Image 1 (cartoon, one colour):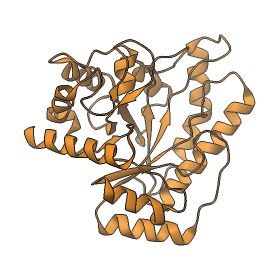
Image 2 (image 1 turned 45 degrees about the vertical axis):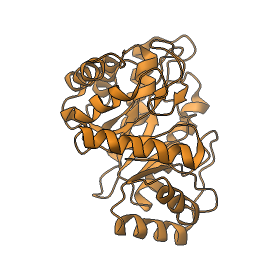
Image 3 (image 1 turned 30 degrees about the vertical axis):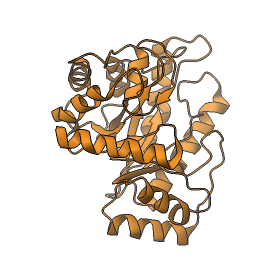
Image 4 (image 1 turned 90 degrees about the vertical axis):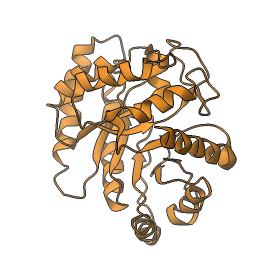
Length: 281
């Protein structure tokens, strides 16, 4: 259990103390401005301190790629920038010892058919996956969206065509965001809802592909297509569903990362609640 941590001021100098304050056992970071295209080189001294400390504390690390990335865009400039941005996140992920890099699955813009957008995903994203040849290269983890607009991947079964477009590459995995999948239409709140959703995901991508969970409650109702995170147990999904998630075989050994409101105190409370639910499971 852990969370996304701020790193302004340095990965080791800022990110690690924040992770410890929230009681994190795993952490996620940005290695670039999440709302921009810049590809900063990082600070080698901070990288090494961060990597050594995480290894010493047995704390897995994940990177979240910038939000602007969209391999389904009809705009060539956006696609070119997406290639450069994701390649940068993957490289920086390897440099800091990250196990995975999370990227949003994007959308088919400009009124183009899904099939055309997915063909472009194959053309531009598959070569990046093929570059992941070293043992310490991170996995690329696909994160579905809340289903806004012409999203390429929102419901669990949408991962099927996406995986097919990328030949089910061995370095490909899934990051399941509970808020996103709830907003997209999977009702996680009632008893059995989370189990059914995870079963559908397994039926679609197979075992071992779920590598990370973004554990976020939702301020909005099921099927709202609105990505508004809430603290664990205080949203429309509810704490019981997260207990059900932790009891499912698909999540055994899979880290959970919160991306919830509230600053350090709120994040610490969410991590503590997930740990309590883990004990119950």
